[in-house]
Every structure is written in C-alpha cells, then in structure tokens.
Length: 187
Length: 323
Image (cartoon, rainbow over all chains, first blue to last red):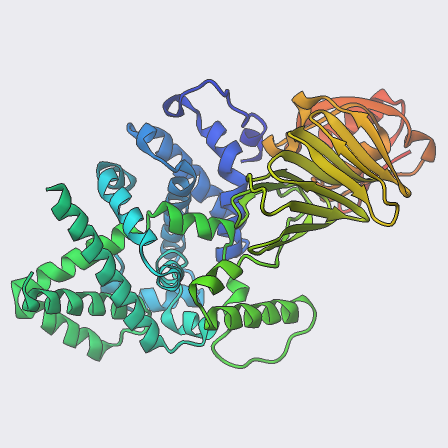
C-alpha cells in the first residue's frame, strides 16, 4: 500500500471514470483506513487488503461516474470486504460470535453493481433518511453501519434493547412510507 | 393501503429489527419462520424489509458520519463488569460513559451537540480529512491534537499540537476561531493553515483574509493570501510563502523551500514514527529545499543529510540521529 501511496496524487483533469486506483487511494485511503482500523482493531494487513480489493473492484465498475459520493461508496466496499475476510477467517472476536452462531440469519448485502443500478432508489432513500428524526437516524447508523448489537447500543445510550428494536422498526416503517409516497407521486 | 397491509408491513419491520439486533435465539427464530410461512404476503413484506435494510448499508449520509467519527471498539462498554484497568483505557471508558450520557438524552439538538467539544487526535504519519459540524472542512496533519466546539454562536477550534488546514464554511454570524499557544486566528469564510513550528505558532493564509492576534500583546493584523504570520515570543511576524505549496501534506507530500533544517525536522517528526533528532545545533539553521511523498521520508532524511555533508546514524527501533 505504501508504495502505491507515493504515486497517489493523480491528475486533476482526469474524469472520475479514468482516475486510477492510486488517485482514490491517495484521496480517501487514509481516512477509510483510520475509520476501519478504529472500528475493527489494528489488524493492519486485513484492513489494507480490504481497501486494496475495494479499490480494484471500484475501478472496474463501468458506471462509477454516476456515484455522487465516491468516498462513502468506497468506504462501504472496503468495509464489506473487511467483514467478509473477518468472517472467512472465522475470527474469534466477540462481535462476530453472534453472527456465526446463527449462520442462516446473515443480513442481506447488495453488490456495488446492484447499488449503481438502483441509483434513483438510493437517492430517494437518502431523502427519506433526511426526513427521519436525528435520533432514529443515529440508531439506524449504529445498528446498520457500525454493526452494533442492541445490547451494545443499549450500553451506549441507556435505552433498553427492546426500546431500540421498536425505534428501529418504526424508523424502517417511516422510511418505507416515505419511499412509497414519493413513488406514488412520481407515478 | 389497507389496514391489514399496514399491519403486515409493520410486523415485517419488527421482525427485521429483532433479527438484526443480535439476540435472536432459537425460539424466536422458530416463531419468525412460522410467521413468514403463514402467508405469501408475510414473506413478501419481509423480503421488502430486507431489501430496504440492504440498501441502507450504502447510504452516503450514514456512512459519512461513520467515516468522520468512527466508533472505536473500545468505546462500546463491555457487557460484564471487569477489573478496572489503569491509564488510557480508563480515559476511554470515561469517554464512552460521557458519550453514553449524551446519547441517553438524544433530542434533535443533542445529536448536533455530539460534535461539540470533540477531540480529534492523529497518530504520527496519519493524515485525516473531516467535516466539522458547521460544514467547514479540516485536514489534520500527523501527530496533531485538536478540539472543536461548535454552537449556535461559536465556532472555536483549539490546536494543542501539530498542524491543521481549515477550509472555513462562510458564516458571518459566527466567527471561526483557531487558537494555538497564545496565537489566535479568526475568519468568517476562508482557507488557512495553523501549525506549530520551532519558532512559534504560525498561520498561513491560502484564501480570503484572516485576523491574527497575540494573547496579551494586543497586537492585531490582517493577513491575506500568501501571507504567513508567526508568533515569535510576544510579537507577530509577517512573511510570505508560496501559495502553490500550501499544506502539501494534505496530498501526502512534504515540500520545503529554503526552510531551516530545524523546521523540516519538526515537520518530519509528524510523519516518521522513529523520529529524527539533530545532535549538532549548527545544522538547525541550515537551509533545505526538498519535495517528496510522505512515505518516502526515511530516504529523504538520508539524502538531505548527505547534501548538508552531515552524518546520519540509523539504528532500528531508535530515532535517527543527524550530526
């Protein structure tokens, strides 16, 4: 990773589609790496490998000009790659113990290609999220993005796990209603 | 939409929320499978809920927040009460408790306040780009410690250590203030860098105008693009710098043009973990011109030492000594 970073400056006049993996690494590599390392611990090889594989995959995407926020997009890809590798390594980490104990209950994941195909839906979802109360959004983030269990969120927020579960269900319902209303207006 | 459909959707969301929360035991799973098998409507509603859940993972706004303030594994309080550890872990725990208290009383306002008074620390060699809650962009160089406080009336940043570049969101109602070691820089919508140098704290203005003042001295001056103000003792000194090389570390590069070697070393030590020590004071004032990528620092130290006709002692696990 280090050797590539040296050349990571990239040319400003390149279009996003033509920008190299080195450009994206130079632009967001440190930030994504910091976030992943903080979250998943200092297993640096795993983190660097995940960022590399995310970058390679990202640069092979045909429609990446359509991505409004490449930084977040790359972050999700790197995080998914890291989670996969942790799962594969059958890590003993407490966080994943719950997942491996219930193998049929893994959460569904979208591939980057699928997300790109659903760009309009993603944008509508983004607007629906904006309409949520900040607390609901924060709970969704802690659960969906950070992957915390309700027991963990409960210890951070002093809300009961059942209360968190209810709030998340209500937020999801509100998101769905918002999306349906928008869909109905467009139709 | 019929009432029944709403009920089924609501149930589906409740099941999904339960399922993703971590504690989904065998009994619950059986009940869930039974519910889902009960009718095609249930299965369809649940599939729809899962599709929404899958898309949520890609939300730019949720991810941006996690990028800017990642939750450290240490921040999540442990489930059981464990033996009290000493040192930084205690601090981390207090931080987690404080974060818990803040989250405990989440209101729309409280969520905003999560950003208030936050401390940001970068390690040696770590460069971090982030957005402050007022929309201003900040880049932190290696080995930098910064706290920011954003309220309805105040935008205050304090740099305890290191080097930071600010692209300030325009807001005439709230002056953006950066303090470092007795130096104060104020702006309403500009871009500038504040850093610690061996001579004293320094402000480098890239865009707009910045009001720079020194604590206790009552001296105030306005600095424009390309101007650099250093607090030396109790006096502000104004000089010029090359705008083209403003805070190049943001792009993983270090650029020095005719800079005193002491300044170069101070900056190198933000990116080079073993560290560099100058053993001959005569070298401190020597002028150096160099440009290299951050990760080429070890090689750059070698070539600079050679050019000055000095000697480099490098022992694994210890700081480089230049004499």
